[in-house]
Image 1 (tube, rainbow, N blue to C red):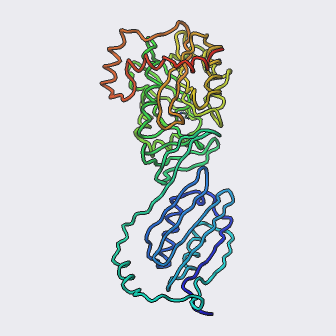
Image 2 (cartoon, protein in one colour):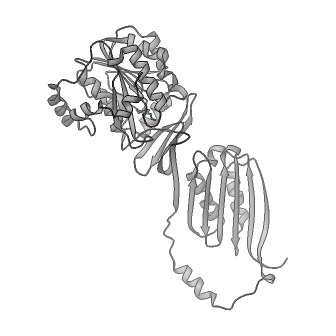
Image 3 (cartoon, rainbow, N blue to C red):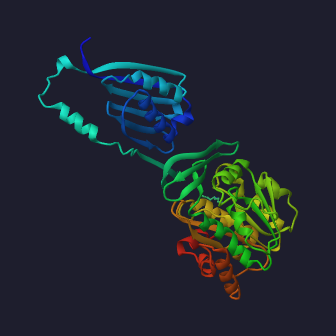
Length: 427
Ligand code: SPD
């Protein structure tokens, strides 16, 4: 065979582990390690994750390149390894076959650049090689991985590092803890952002403090959902609260957050807490009437296990389980993202609690699609407003507890609705 400049192997890896095929950090590491095993000199690498699945990437080596495109849904990776000089591409092939757990594979090998077909130019290659050797690899690997929370027409994307701290498919949902560049570690359920280290306080302060300050004497609080623990952490800041019951359907969420988001999952050992890993919908159906002062429904979006948290039957039972002056607060979706769910929830609450007793509070969450989010209320008994006399005690509480979103002015203003939102919830 005549001499060639390079050797190119084109590989089909089939029936690979689909989770590995979607794990951009693992694939980048394996590709870089495969190059090193084959004694290549790695210059840099760039990898991209496609939402919801698929990875593409290239490792540039002094001896040419390794490239990959994956289709996790087929457990398939298309890989090519292009080498020149002494490097043996088949060492990289063997390494990747094991790492991707490929059950079947095929490859073809091509010689590239047959020297008898090429004309050599006359320049001093030794000086160029010397220059290349002077260059020190800064070890800068670029990676471009985005997590996207979206519907068919609208999305919010966060760039994340590719590190996956937790990834479990439970009987209810896929639970993941990932790391975003801007907002730190993030809890995602299925493909939806639930909370992040750096903006969780927006949500958790606003789900809990307004109702606890509007209620004259909240002692017994029920939290449905809220597995990350941020809501109970806020509720338990109120020294007058004597008992908190939390019912979370998915124990994996609690475990993942205790391990990886400890500042959010900070109150699970509080003696006032009774924690039940159970179905909140079944729990409320069996709950005693007139038991709770405040019920907080910290559920995810109305798909998957949280769908029942948006039903008439669920809120009818919540109404029954509230004491005479009780307040219900529910994760209310967005009037700009989930208009239908937002409206239907408000009409449900109006029908159960009364038209004037179903106010909406708006707040801002940078990591949820559109940023505009809501809590929706059901006030049992008389209409409740924040007494001016409470302003001072709220401000003192805010100072003592170091709150970062909620204050007395935010409390009042969050219930003021833009006109388009008023129209959206008209009967
Ligand atoms: N799309 C986000 C809906 C919010 C769901 N709950 C967040 C959990 C925070 N404790």
